[in-house]
Length: 143
Image (cartoon, rainbow, N blue to C red; front, side, top):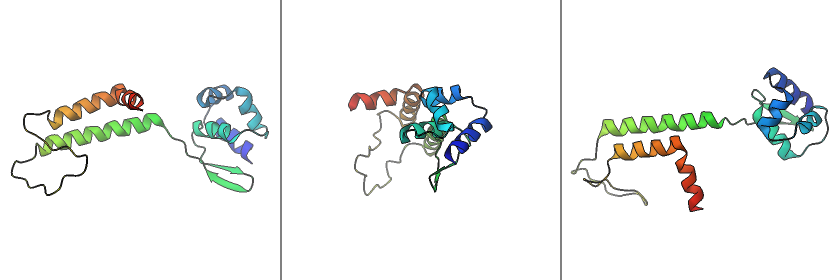
């Protein structure tokens, strides 16, 4: 049953009810209610399941559902690794040749113009923005 799966996964992860409540942003009382088999909203269930590592499936009624636990720090590290690889690749390739024929430029693409900011400088600026979280603020400001 759902409440047994959640409780066992929490215990296996070494998390207390208080820790799960804090991580999920729900009252501790809701964790106790869920683990006793009481009704909770789907949103509360989603929040709780998302913070318990190792909880891959839950059974709701007669339906077995996959639980997706997203680790935002892991996603950020992967994105920074990707930026690093892209930066090294751009440095290895160098600027485009003046003789290179580019039949089509994609909509929204920016062509390299000698004397402007280099790809390296752009990659480093983007990396600084991602590390500082500035790219998130810019999106919010534009919205």
